[in-house]
Image 1 (cartoon, one colour):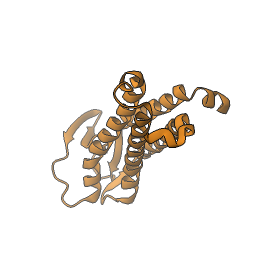
Image 2 (cartoon, rainbow, N blue to C red):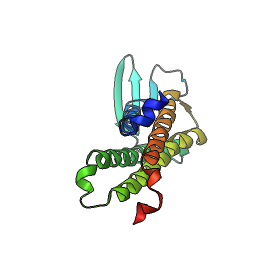
Image 3 (tube, rainbow, N blue to C red):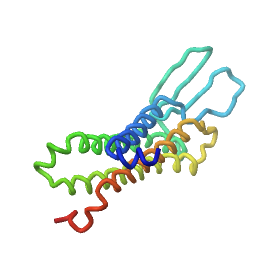
Image 4 (cartoon, one colour):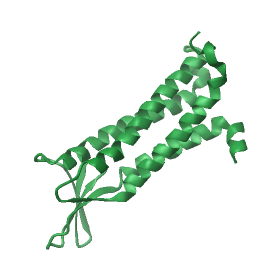
Length: 180
């Protein structure tokens, strides 16, 4: 399998990046935390897309988070869509540069495109890594963390790391000629 990956770097670097992209998009549909059990039948959740999900007897309601009242976990939930959105934007830019490389190389040198892709991949990777770290380090007063989106985020970090390694390996042999 490693021989196939080294032979088809172009295919696999885009495939790993697309896999990470899909995982992040899927996280936006998941609940990130659940309110501690109360005596009522109502269940409260924070979603990855910074909404409050209320569930009562099979009826669901989604509302915007209005006020966090100095709750650091709530503030983390409110920043998640922005971090995730920038991450998705960086990843889509890398894919656009990859798919349109022959057209873009008429304007920008091919190796400069490669450097731009590596910088965008690093920014996406850093943002993907920041999201679960924020959730793991901030503790909500009355909220229990749901692990599925955190696990998906770590898988997205791994997929993006594999993609970045393949992007780097695709042109590393060019060496000193990169900036000329």
